Length: 61
Image (cartoon, rainbow, N blue to C red; front, side, top):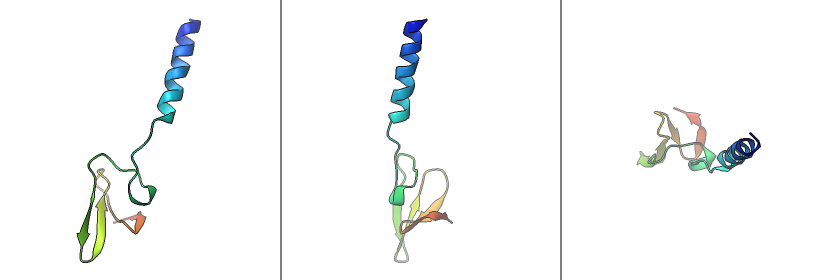
């Protein structure tokens, strides 16, 4: 029982430290999400179906 507790604690601490993919402005994005230039302004897709401007990452359009 003690070894399984140590193993579980080790796994959880590693899982919490795993890096998360961040896009423009620190916004959470999925792998393969990207930005395109539209009428002179960079519009990004986060991979979850949301679009946002690269210079204003937290205003979802």
